[in-house]
Length: 300
Image (cartoon, rainbow, N blue to C red; front, side):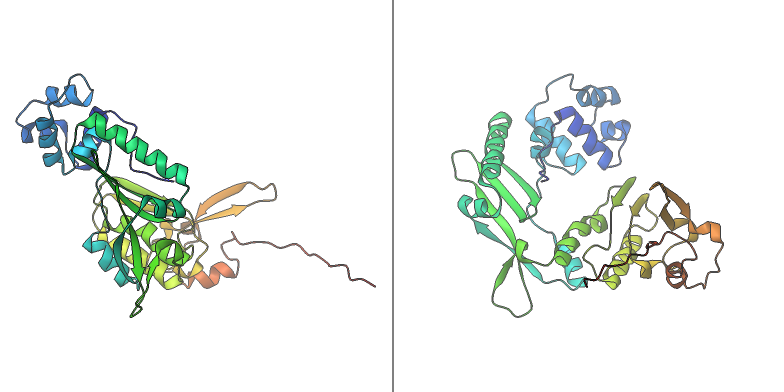
């Protein structure tokens, strides 16, 4: 289960927000009309900041006061770009609906729900903010929770609609493929430079053409940006030199001692018009399963 509450100090979150913004301490100091030494002073938690200054830092760094004070990331629902990407992938329309604590407790363990609320209420009291909001994802869906002092929590969740159907579907009722799209979308929308995404079995629950389309969109979205996607896959159809260079395709082969070795397609010096997937399945590059003979005993 992943929540957006971070066990960090204000100074650590300030530094993290500055790095995400791709700013140096000198650049942040200039924007804040202060000195580099003062930025370092705050990032190392050597002094208390007034809330007005925290608000100014949040504005300059493109984040929120809630995040800097409490580690709560304010992200209520999918933005317009996310919705358009889902439609581009052939997914359905999305919207949010309000639910009660009891309804949420039927989707995920009630003790987990109460633990989250207790933690948020404690953060609210510590921060002196009028409200705190967080968005988190569990297997059962997306939930957005807002807590105000002295009021009942506001909870909303993501629901989806298929075509002309009059019925809404909870996220937990969707196919594994649709859920997988939600997992991958952030990689297309992120603007954080110097980021490496590592994904095991990228093609899991996706049609081969959807996997290929996602890869093309990733390369297009981050063209010229210092960003990398490292993934494993069993999907041989995307092994195409129009998508990847030879040195970007690597094989993992297990030997007789159950040890794995890794090597690049580049060692084979294939022509650029070579049908790689066909050659791979024929065993030219290795890294394919080898099956032993097995005879079933038939009863007399």
